[in-house]
Length: 380
Image (cartoon, rainbow, N blue to C red):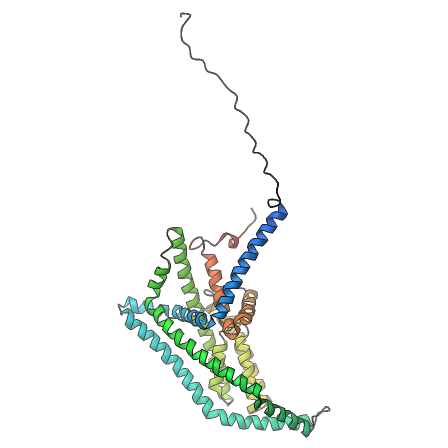
């Protein structure tokens, strides 16, 4: 081998130690208290936006409430519309059939209520007068009995209020509310017509700005909203019908006046969870007390309690299990907030809206993947 033979020299180098990242500069916003302050500012901003939205909706309640009610009714009728479309019924014909069926049912119920009240109102007034006289006789024998002059004074005060300007202004406010109700009802029917006829196309139009995963998420939200609202309305209507039939039959057997209107009130009030059916039952017991005496009123109370127990322990878990997965505390809080914001209508709409919100959370990242704050956390 010559001196100048070329040889390969391999140089082994020790791996250099990994460089440590420079520590982040400590400021007022990246320490523990700063992170809490940042999160608080974010929460305050969200609350401000929500407050502005709620305020705007309350100012536009004449539009918002009919649209929301139309959406809920359209979701409830959606299975019927899908069935007619599967039978190749034209959209316009299917829409008119569904809408006219709903109007006929609601109109028939309203006619029955008005007819029953008109036929039995005189009997109820006479029974109420007899009950007031009986109450006056009972009060006369109490240790703190009211004198005849005091009782007549209370009657005179009531009569004075009914003829006062304050009562007149209240009556005018009632006329204004009735006008707003008719306007909202007409708007709801019109909006419901277009939701039934063009609901899928309207939703696709609203989804045009989205694409990819955002589009898929929006589609899931729409499907979940319709499923939850429809299931809630149909399930609640089933439970309310059982309540109304049970209490109404008992009132008819006991010959309590206005049994049919009271049964309808029970049906409608059952759409307010937890408290609706109970309040309607108390009203029925009061009517029985005035018209039939304390014995019949006690029986009515027993019937109302029995029907509510049957509903709460057997019917509600079976019918509402799939459509309403909310804790009783959440329902109570939603009822309270809805009543404060929107009164009776807010109490009716608060629970299905809360159910829809929770349903959206459960499908946020996929058909069976909730948003990360709602995922089940288990220790490793």
